[in-house]
Image (cartoon, rainbow, N blue to C red; front, side, top):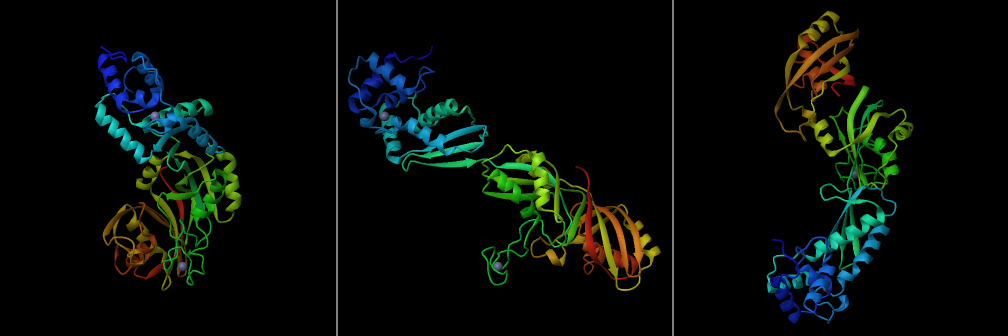
Length: 409
Ligand SMILES: [Zn+2]
Ligand SMILES: [Zn+2]
């Protein structure tokens, strides 16, 4: 049996409430919010009063509970729709922060009535404002994953907008050395700017992140960004071939409907000679996890220099030895300050000699992601075993390193 507002228990409770508190229709109706669906609390309150043959009516402004707050619903709706001007979104959700006095009066009323059909006032505010905005803006409320979350502070009459990030996937190539993948803050001042960094806060003038995100931030009017690369090359290594996958996360974007086909050449014109992007498409947070955890093989072009003249036969033999070999690398000295000291096993899939000229040789090597290539060449004081220097019996070091392919995407 479904309960109606005419139910004896309900009318008795309502009578008891109205004998003690002056309530507006909505605040009265809210005590029985779960009785009879499809009504607003305001309508519920009116119906109850009718059954009780109550002629006395409390204006919203004189309501003991909300003292006028329920009358502000259309004001909050306009406040929100005005502040969403110029922001692109599909779905939204309203949240509200209500005056503590009103909340505690609501609790007092709940304790007094012990009604099991009541709902909190903020639930009514959120729902009714949501309904008005759905109509006014032609957008839908979404509880799971709204594009934009709007939180109303009813005490200060202010709004807080939480716009969900926009994710863009792409691949980048890097043609110039000495550009780090991500912004590298000065170690001394941590980005604030000091004498050491010439008051720039950065160790490097620019980064792949900065170069790629500049135009995208402009077009989306985002507040900030985060660059998620599928691994990273050394600062002094080029990234060539088909490029390295990345996902750029734009925070608080106002514009989300970008034409990525048109954006790509704009980014590339801006980064000309340094970085180039391709394969841009929209992405999501899950893809960040995917590219962060993915194990992609990488192919490198390594130019190395020996302490003395290099023998091509010995090098060819070394390349053969490394093919399909698993090497072990103890954390290199150069990164020991930021990576745990441990032995990592890495697989070398392929290695061949491209050219040898006196003390200089060029190798093409395909290895598991995360292999420390410089250490594979030098041996890093025997921290990497086996290593090329050891195999050919001549100490060598990398003088140029490029990633020429990231496989498996
Ligand atoms: Zn009220
Ligand atoms: Zn500094």
